Length: 130
Image (cartoon, rainbow, N blue to C red; front, top):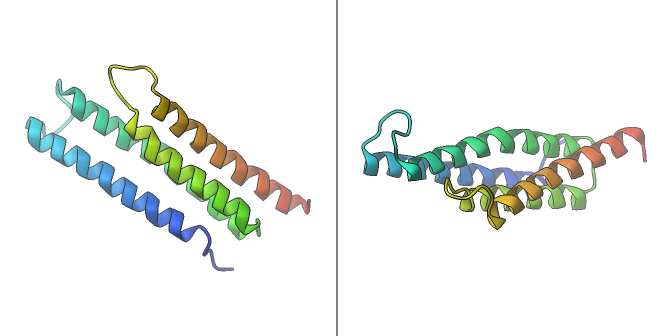
């Protein structure tokens, strides 16, 4: 069974990851820090934004792929994929060393968690024949 519905979401996430990586490279060049983050707050924020993306996006995308492979309805895949992309784009926009929480960071995580929950629920429902 081909996995087609989730492909555009995977592509957007890949581009997002590349953009986050470029932001680190530009900050490293500006600050002259090759390894680590030194005392550069902007570099720290960008490294953590990329790290957070790398920690959450793969598992969430895997869950959505598994949901599609299990035969979940396309609408559920679009919902989960859309929420994941929105969450992973919003989160780094609100990640600031000077603020424990921002609206963008908060919504980014809420949308990411929700996308994972949607994928899990539809996969379990399909697996149980519900």
